[in-house]
Length: 201
Image 1 (cartoon, rainbow, N blue to C red):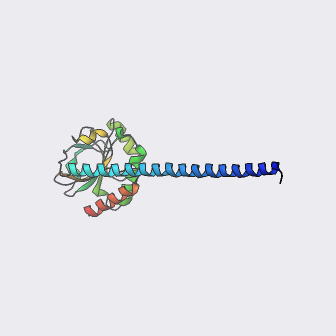
Image 2: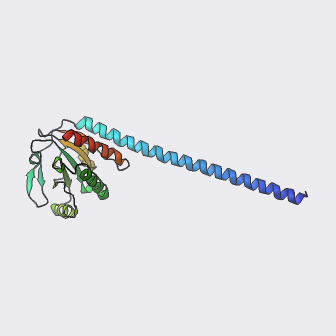
Image 3: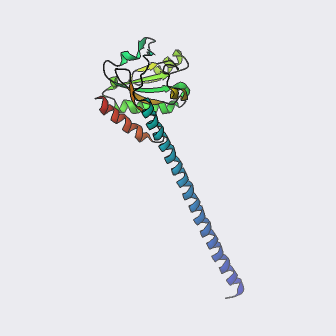
């Protein structure tokens, strides 16, 4: 074997080694990035769970104001009139809170789970105006009763954040079972809604 062939063989081996090492470190780097993303998602999920838990602990037993609820037909009724002597699940959101597709996903999930007991659920929404509410409600094919309430209807501090949330309203106007849905963990919302459905039966 002459020196030229030896050099070519060494270069081939060196190139192969270099490519192998590059691929190895690239795979390692990708695995690390994927682990970081997974950890970040888990932390976010735990943070939302913790927030829901703390919120539930702080708010359970609080009294809800008997606020004016405006129907899609622009009629007014008091919140207490929605109860009919039984507790109901309330889904609360504000237009200011932002994510319309998120609200719509939650509404579809409520419809799916409560399809045979829609009288046990109500949506309380806040829009910039009653007109905006009527347009949005008109576009919504939901059979769930939907009402507009003013932005300052409830004096609870976390209301100012605009995050959507659920709670159970009891005939005594006290609240319980507060839950903040997490779009990253849709299964948690499903489990929450199924447990509330059992509670309200």
